[in-house]
Amino acid sequence: MTTIAIIGAGQGLGAAVARRFGSEGFAVGLVSRNQERVDGLAAALAGEGIKARGFAADVRSPQALARALEQITETLGPIEVMQYSPLPQKDFMRPVLETTPQDLVGPIEFSVHGPVAAVHQVVPGMRFLGERRGTILFVNGQTAVRPRAHLTGTSIAFAGQAAYAQLLHEVLGEEGIHVAQLIIGGAIEPGHPDKDPKQLAERLWELHSRRDRFRLEVATE
Image 1 (cartoon, rainbow, N blue to C red):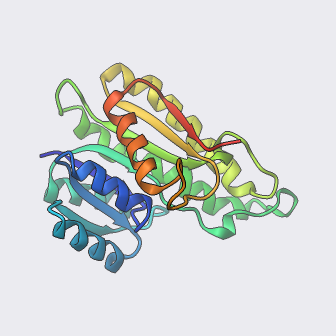
Image 2: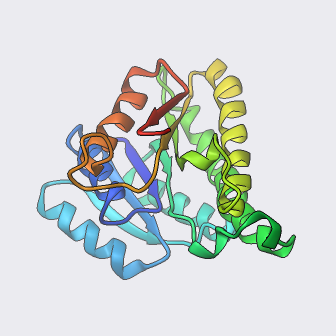
């Protein structure tokens, strides 16, 4: 059995992705800062017949994030899919003229340092998965491709993450590791025809299973 590691797992998109991939036979590693929250989600998934475990880590701590991913491999099996989708903090979203150098430290740690640490942890194992060597999925708001002056921290940090993802797509694609990015316009909305968590989870499954594109934009302007 192979595993999906969901970094930033919660009751919305993370839970929907866990159920979608779990229905395909994946074990699910759930990563969040809150151990109690991911333990509760793991228990709910287990009650549905999905093998799942929760792991606590702050994505702003590369060492803690790498350790959580290592524990996922040790307890659930090789990581075939890694999804990086934590929600940014509200204080990252300041107007451009009010944003200081210090204000950018958190967003960059969150959206650039975290993904780099996670990728370095999982790629070596993906190289041993066989012909289809794994998938790395990034989930971002549309400021990753359309910066907004009142959302400066995420605009800058998400753009950095998008550039990193595209570089990974080009380089790792040569090794058979697929890298893709889902861009979501606005908030995730239960019941929305495009932005319902189940619909977005299906799009992420397609990015993994079809492996035919780098970026998919949903409900963007």
